[in-house]
Image: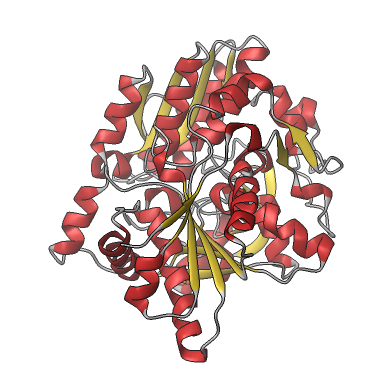
Length: 451
């Protein structure tokens, strides 16, 4: 099987993250206090997050932010990740398109999430924090955070979405192997969890419920900070190491992407690969198309409303300007657990609003069909989340087949699916179905959004 990989040497690795906020024609609106409706500054957020992350969150001036040497040294353990020309997938599709994927699945944690986990734990350790807490859906972020906490000598507590914990028990085992305490959410260990269970004893959990519990733990535990795996600006910032590498690797391949694609939950891996290329649209006149592939069952980009909303179910977080389905939205039990989030990140929401990128909805069965084709052609079993990006890339490649255009398509393979085989078993046995949320359900959950 013909295949070509592009890998950077150690001295070619990026030494700064790219901050797209500095180049955006319309700056993101600020987070606001839910009671006073006043904008929040870094000091206001620092009781929840490491302070340096708060500064990065609100930075709209500096286009590049240096990667701390201690974090860069840890990156060198597994970066660069390969950029791969997917010849076999192209052949299977009989498309004239050139398809490339950035393979974030090859690092020891199996997904892109470690890129921000190392940075956030470093900043927490630097300011004297001893404990970190977080939420996780499918468990990729929880595993990355648990490992990064161990690397920097921190104690970690993870709230994992209950349904995902049942679907992917080995991810919980990985977190515990790295020393983290893992609790299914909603739980009876926090006030937020108790309230949710009281309202709905059979609640399967969501990223919104898990965030509420993790934030409550962070704000009621001495010397503890909350860390987040997606949605927020500083998380997408850390992930731009992906796209900055891909820029250099595409140059090695002698090509430049016409289309950049990633799956979409809150925006971390999408921003990670897309933002460095998007800056050339904003500054250099490039015309690359950017596509965020979300589940049909959780369609905040295509069917949500742009509103100030809470990032969690209990309303503990600041209000964020986002495309949202409402913070009380209860997503269907799809296997792409990392994409079951009610809202989109602030930067992504503004870019969608300004028409600089687009979202597409992928039905669950189409995503698994795409994942199967990718596995059988390229020999890599993708995570269910990543399969949404593959499905969107296949759609674009098929358009090229119809028109005869030889476009260059780049997508981010955000993680492998080797711990998701129960999902593949269900697909192969014919036990999976599509879920499409109704307009009425969306209208109902949007009623929970503050005016």
